Length: 103
Image (cartoon, rainbow, N blue to C red; front, side, top):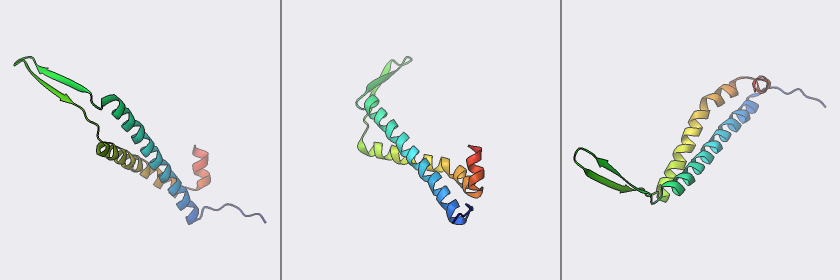
């Protein structure tokens, strides 16, 4: 009982969903790594700047809050999803065998 693989609509839908899911996971992963790096590197970091013409100094401290981390990871997931949307649409429109040959 051998059947040839045919690019049906459901197969292209699965192919598309796989591409989109991969981009979303990559976006979340990159956002999480960036958020951890920002928290380790900048939470509580105090710095200042000086105006040499008036000799005034402005000091400020960075605070990386949990809300800021969630917002950063959400934005990274959105950017990853949007960045992978057009390649996923293109991949869903071409036959799967041709897409696999290109990579």
